[in-house]
Length: 500
Image (cartoon, rainbow, N blue to C red; front, top):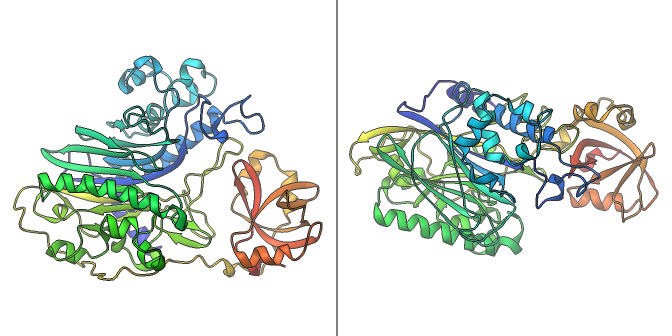
């Protein structure tokens, strides 16, 4: 936690868009869908398409406000100068009369986003895209000056549920995209940073980091990104390139899964954590910034009790020379803010939930780094590293959440939840309860507590085996973490020690 506090202290310094230092943030916002209800995912459809738990404009509003709260933690409330976003909705109705972002924002200048998504909601307002709405929300939070760049869904005809989006305060020189196998289009952007070019390759690869069956798709994803990187470096071997996004791979994928053979991120793309080797020209073609943090702090999301590093930022050697854009050494951070986007018990990301008026942020923590303009210096001379990372062998390490460390103090009974309204239950998400009830049949995996059904999520095999031995209809008693999955309330049993 001390590293997080230190990084946040750095971020509280003010860096304007015209300063010689700027921040780049990478943020998977977990399903930012607009309010028109036309969506590939049923969770984000409106009645009558989804009559059981329809998506509402108020939830959309909450989602955007929570994103803005997180992003505004950077640069003393001004927000980062560049943001690589993942998981915006690939709009099913992207036309809106052909109006651009500036035209739409000017048209609704006199009304707040809250007004538009509550009493002022209409069919016309529903046509405003999630990109345009978030630009307006950012402006209301004092984060102005962004232009948005997204992909064209008809250029590659790759109509996935999501699209990558970049917000930038710098002029855009060029944009392009490439289709990726079973994934969102790769987004390429070249920015003008005070007269110097900065390339951004924004990614969201095929899901399933721990699923061997999907590894082949990620190898193909990596090959396309490597082709784009090679093309840039062929034009200028010293080009300043940031590769970022949600790669659905751990930075140390080859070490975590050594029996998988070659993996996309390490073997095909060439990402490593040898910073010294990169600068000396004897190591990798890309330095993965997860190498900047101590092993125990390398994590942007939690899956089955282990921290993963799906969110990535990788740099080329050009970002260390004394020409153009340069990485500010040791400035890499994960944006985990106690009391905001991480839970108070385990320090995990607070995922988004379609419950009540919406709750949470994202299942991924944003990551970021600072950069500076060093001018027209030498492309053959490089910055001196303060404490350069020299991991010649990628470590086989994943920090583990110690779920067994819960206190032995009495936990409140889960039955008290039945006395609360939906809005009051939202405040209980992530809290631990003593759950006593009966196990229903196998077709309805869950538990009945006081006549009310809750889902039951058992992430570990030993827990599942222990409960399956009890059989249908058997009484059970355990400590459960109250949560929501796809709009349905559930209890999570994170460790076998929670069984009572």
